Amino acid sequence: MKLTLSVIKADVGSVGGHTKPSSRMMAAVDIEVGKAIATGLLIDGFICHTGDDIAIIMTHTRGEGSPEVHQFAWKTFLAATSVAKTSGLYGAGQDLLADAPSGNIRGAGPGVAELSFDHNLSAPRPAESFMVFAADKCGPGAYNLPLYLAFADPMYCAGLMLPPMIKGFRFHIIDMDNTAGDSVIELDAPADNYHIAALLRDNERFGIDRIVSQTHGEVAAAVSAQRLHAIAGKYTGKDDPVAIIRNQGIFPAPEEIVSPFAKAHFVGGDARGSHVMPLMPVPLNTPVTGMYCLPIVSCAGFSIDKDGRFAESYTDFFDNLAWDEVRRCAQRKAIEMRSQGWSGAAMLPYSELEYGGFRDTVSALLKRFRLREERKPEAAE
Ligand code: 13P
Ligand code: 13P
Ligand code: MG
Ligand code: MG
Ligand code: MG
Ligand code: MG
Image (cartoon, rainbow, N blue to C red; front, side, top):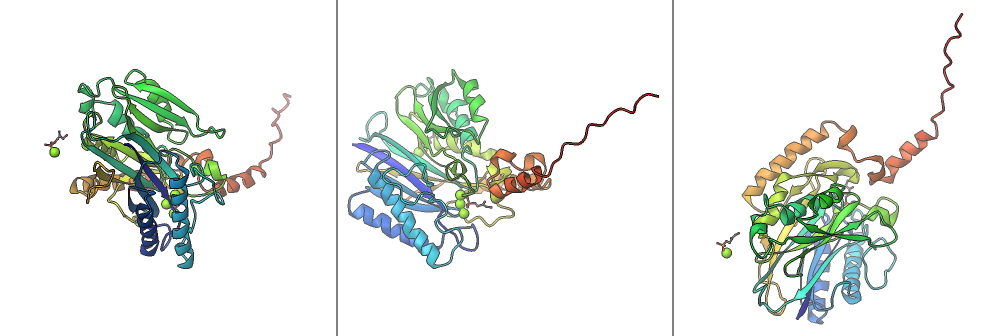
């Protein structure tokens, strides 16, 4: 069967400030997902949150961009918004930018990552396992560096030296500044590695859209790469990307995929979406409560049976002692960066400041600048 994995994620309200969704919001989402499975819209579904962003992880056979699946997610987020409003929660409905999009909701606010494959549990995929990354308080290119390292650098993924992967992977990279639509370039790793790096170094403009096996033509990864503030034209929270990564066999192993996250690399995001801070790997359903407002990322692992249903349990990759060390490293890096406050590299450049208000402050001051009358040299006596 042609199976589609869809992850649709949105921030539609949170309790006590921008920390986490309430239990009643999660319960509302859970009920809707249960109904969609019962009616046969979805084969299976799983929900979790990262900070105050709720992710719905789904399997179905309706293909990518399915209007039914997208509309289901939109209505489910509306149901959670209504709970958030009733309870007086912060930012109710924040990521639902359009009034009522018809069909596909990509570009309407929620983060969307989807990929499809022939699912028959035979070669080259005798078992299907995958991971879902979800981030909060961070910019759209947060996965650029870790996915480059996992899929293009044998220093991180020794599996790239094995026959099923040695031809490398094709990176589909999207230019998120192109408001005319999705503008994508395809570049092959390892041949084009330097070109790939030249684009991916700019986390705010270029993002990985998908990664495809050159040997098997199978999609390995799909990422939601979009800029909410470019869509909405005003502050709407950070872009907080989600990603689906298939693992094992013809793809990198989970440890090869998560190891680059040990860097706790600096990304755009954090408080008011306007700082440069380290990305901290956290367990599923972690609220944002730490000192300042660190960008966080969670990672859940799943297996699916022949009918596309999730195994009865999942793996929480960052819920492990090993990652405590990385969390301490992220915290140390954060304290270092915060010690220079608003100065230079600690905050995002003018064009990337998420709160338009920062720009309004500067624009008002720019109007008050005056050209100084040219100073003439003293006339020689
Ligand atoms: P096990 O099969 O022993 O679980 O480990 C497989 C492996 O190679 C991990 O990368
Ligand atoms: P989110 O809207 O992504 O939760 O973040 C809000 C923010 O800017 C934190 O200061
Ligand atoms: Mg929020
Ligand atoms: Mg959020
Ligand atoms: Mg957000
Ligand atoms: Mg094993």
